[in-house]
Image (cartoon, rainbow, N blue to C red; front, side, top):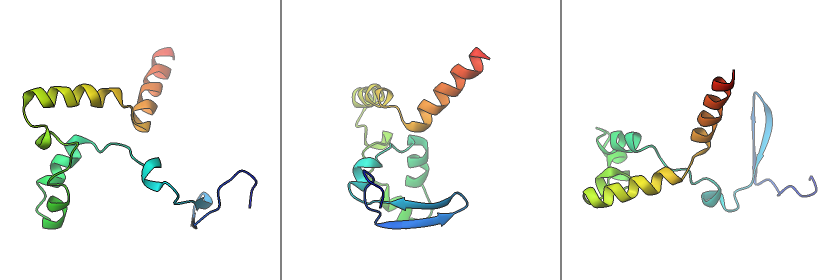
Length: 98
């Protein structure tokens, strides 16, 4: 046990070694938004379970409720930056500097 590090609830062993995971607040720590295009594909899936699971997904355009709501959700979504979007932005800045 490392001082200051939370207790591991489980560990996974893979090529990078053993990685410990703590599930406390798991949903809070992992709430990156889903890509709306992917959600749309899931909603139209021929796999019935997959389409049912995403039928009422709150972040999709299908639930936007019209042009006014859709415009508002786009504005809100653009202010939230995912880890991958931040990485892409930083990579673009690096390429510009190079």
